[in-house]
Image (tube, rainbow, N blue to C red; front, side, top):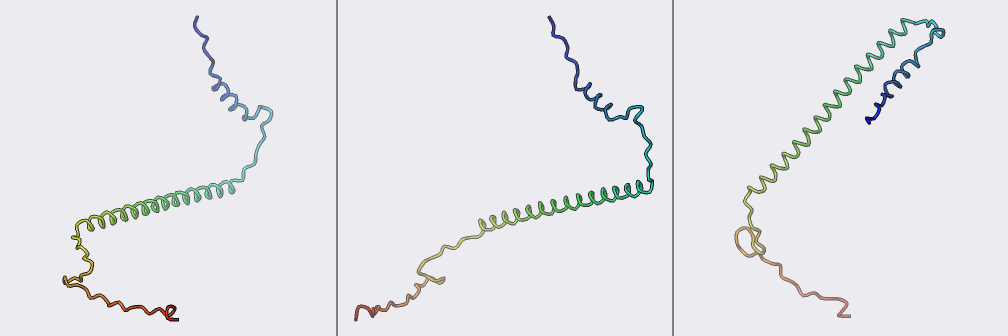
Length: 118
C-alpha cells in the first residue's frame, strides 16, 4: 500500500505569515506622509550607500596592496636564496690571513697571580 503524500506545510505557513501582517479590512488607517522628510531620508540613504561602496573599494585596494607587497617580499627572498647559491663561497681558513701567511699570534705572557704570592 503506497504511503499518503505529505502536504507541503512550509508553503502553507509562509502564506499564513504573509497574510498575518496585512491589515484587516476594518483596521486600515490613513497615514500622513511628509514628502520632504522622505526625500531627505532617501538622499541620506543614497549617500550612505555611496560611502559604503567607496569604503569597500578602498578596502579592496588595501587588500591588493598588502597582497602585492607580500608577493614582492617572497620574490626578493627567493632571489636572495638564488644569489646565495650562485655566489662562490670562499673557504675560511683558520690561522691564515687572505695571503696564505700564518697570522702572528700574540705571545702569551705568564700570568702573575697576586693571590699566590701572598
